[in-house]
Image 1: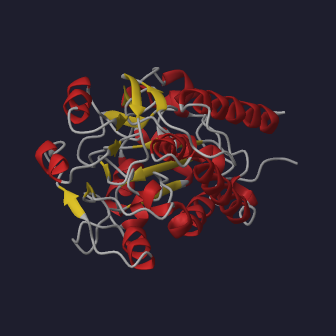
Image 2: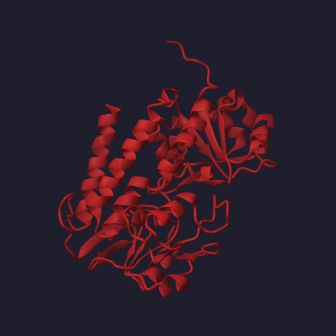
Image 3: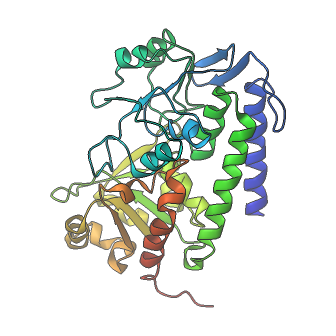
Length: 336
């Protein structure tokens, strides 16, 4: 029943997007203008874009996956182990397309509007982003902007593909890409049955020297949404602590007992952080911490695995799922 419900929800989301994107159906030729509704209103794209720019995290992977090289996109600021501004799966895709590295925008201090404008784009893709109203208004003076559908940093990988591919006039190709990725996920996850039905929590921004507050990603965040693709579920404690429109939350460590229903803990950090979690008198009471059901993701390319994107999923999926499964193996066997 849960799988049927999930399928219905996905079909409903697709139907709404197709309506907002001008009624473009799979297999139909795209007609213009295209109208896309999003959190800031409506964007109209009058003709097929020839020059595509993207801002924020990973939006450039949609056109790249569909064979289009953007004129510019944000440089990687996490997981870039060689410092060239490109994550390895992006470098590989550019090589497959025989393309040089496009202009990279430095977003360390926010969007570089002048750099974006200099690329003279016909459309700006930002379906997965944290755009403010001011950001959107400024970018819209440069070119039509495809913003996030509902809330900042809450667009899952399917919505990212659907909205950005609609902005390219390639909705049917976007749907084909989604089906391909879903098949890859299903095949990979099938090899790790120990994950099925386990509950997972993504704790983030922890300081090993100060564990008085537990910060976590909510059920609105793409990392947490991705758990469902892997056969995992969100525990009731995280669901109840998730505030609509917010991708992250926090609670005092004194309330750590509220997370007794968490089977697996995923976090950004290293062994020092994990050791601190086990030693802290409050966090050590969390059953998942006590059992050692912990996954620590570093600042290497694998560390980006938890935030799924069109090109990264196939590149890191097996290693990421294997880490989760190894942690799940630390759980006691449940009575049959």
